[in-house]
Image 1 (spheres, rainbow, N blue to C red):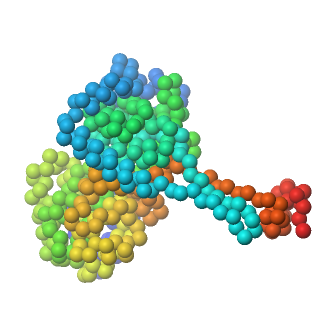
Image 2 (image 1 turned 90 degrees about the vertical axis):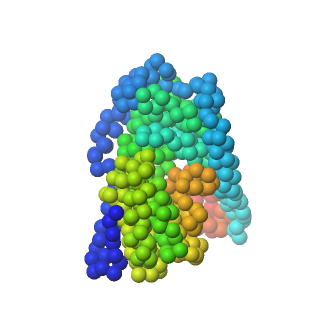
Length: 429
């Protein structure tokens, strides 16, 4: 892991490069994704069959694109009882948290007697993308589908790639548990295109959520406007802020847990304890020696892992805010106090007993979070992503007359006489 010392003369320059560095796949996939989307729009189902056979190495014409209820029930029955109990606990906690997010409508009458309000309504149909590359993610099913169901969406559609035609039973069990209406064994940019534009058997949706690889992210970017999207997700990341009260083995374990996601994932430690700064890399090496996903985690940590030594913990919040990490762990003596000083983070995990991994599965808050410093301006997935706001405005004659002159004056100032005439015809004082 790379080491940065805040006392060094070169630190500001080195940290600026770290904060500005890009970790997404540098391959330009825009043209390839555009061609895939055009192929799906042109050839529909035939394109999905051809592209799935090419990229996922099985023929969906034989199995069907849609995963039927019988297959989902069989998958549920095939899952070990312990896994199902864990899935049910996760679903209960995720649902309980997201139900508390449900917004209230607004309605009032102001001093002019004008009625104002705002109401929330669910998006009708949502497409939920569930990755299925180097690992399968039943947790992503729950994190996408449960808030959509809580919000009241009428139709939940999951697209989950099945490499070599093999579905993950627990992913299908999660679809059953979360109340998903349709599940399709398709992935990549072609799945995003099918969800956005529809095919003969897949009706289009109104919004697409969920993480994916560079092709999925680019496809979401290209279909935005035809449908809504949640965010453009990049490689995952964690920043751990730790003081002398933190255990090196726990810090190392949490850094490795993030690194095993992807070779482009990033794990950063910020500490004011020189002993911890030295011990953690050694502990990382010790734990990596027996890690099943050692190759992925090692490449991630070798290329992108960073240890930052600061003089005092007061220096950490400005650094965190510049990094605006997806995940922020505060393994310090008073995590609540430190959290209050942080402005930019997708999710904050308080104390050494709250590893980010708990948030991945059973904590309750959503694990679909802004990456690549986008926590500066965006938030994690929530029920709000599956709802839309409509404002209401109602004037009676008396209320209209109180605001009409100002409206007419502004319309005339903008040179929009038709606007002004709509006011004049109703009469102004």
